[in-house]
Image (cartoon, rainbow, N blue to C red; front, side, top):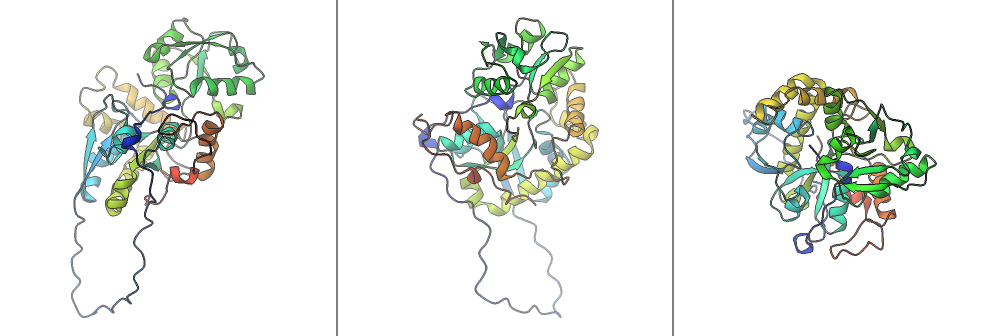
Length: 358
């Protein structure tokens, strides 16, 4: 089971995270006037782009947050764009740490995780939003008496031990007129079963995975979505890259992102085929429940998580980054590489870029 992305924080060693440097905006205009082409000369064949190796760090075992990468790989779109994609298996080291140490070019991150990492000095940046909005939510059993957040006062929360859990829950409960007083039981992956077995009153599942799985098991959940209670909407999952790699290989970065966008846009329009590719590209991973990735992919499409209002994949706005990342700063949750709280807000515009999108 996956830990909901809203709760993930990272701690980076300062020595692995030099201060960020500007992302190049492309080649500077030449001061030399272009020569007039010889129209009588035969056209020269277009050269294939040089092959570039891209190491991609996963945040978890393969799932529908990653479908677009496997689609693009299976369809040959990375190869066509001169990209040799190497997917690093999920391990104990977070993608943000691998990126900061230049051990991966890109990786799966989240708006909160990336904000924590950059505050601590990691030279990383989001180049595309994989999910356009929050897919996590507070969940209670639909058969129970809790019908609104303020009724969570005095109840037991099955949690994961991350710094933004309690402030987030308090904000939602208070917005509904409650006090924000509840008991916390840190259970990690067992949090979901604790709710299902009535050993806890609420938790925060990822609706597109644990939520879909619960429905398949006949467990009905009632959700309280953060944005419905004045909480800032945010990019649940993002594609983050090492700034040093982006500066050294901007052309390869654009080709990698372009093929990735193509893969996720296919997943947004052909969810059944995309899920089948995800399963085929990861033999054995889904043997216990091959229907789950199919249902999850369809859920992401039906709920409009993958594309923006214009039908585009990957786009990001300053408003959204400033809203939620600003909340983390206002709550005193952002610390520098020494573990000291930031005394000034980060440059929210430096947390993301749309420059590498096609």
